[in-house]
Image 1 (spheres, rainbow, N blue to C red):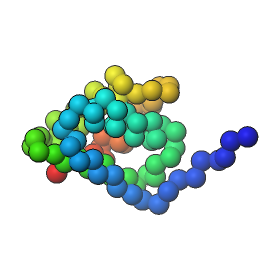
Image 2 (image 1 turned 90 degrees about the vertical axis):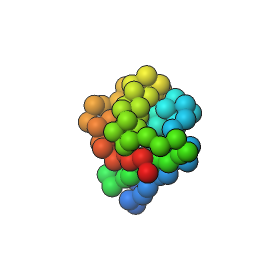
Image 3 (image 1 turned 135 degrees about the vertical axis):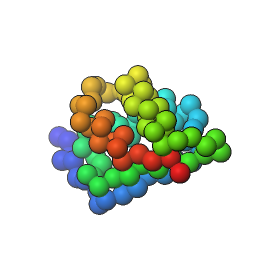
Length: 91
């Protein structure tokens, strides 16, 4: 018997070294899986930072590409992807 999903309070996740390949291939798709499965609250922010300066829009594009190509565990709704990407910033 599985436990019911319990959402956490509003939160932020910061990825250091976010301009690297690991973020696109593993970290962002894993976070997208949490969104898909209902483990992240509606008030959520994903912030990336790294030595290589990139524009937030480019980071969001990379995030969207990573989700569509590398997500595991089943399909994700477009509205979940849109919500995660909209809550993503590169600082």
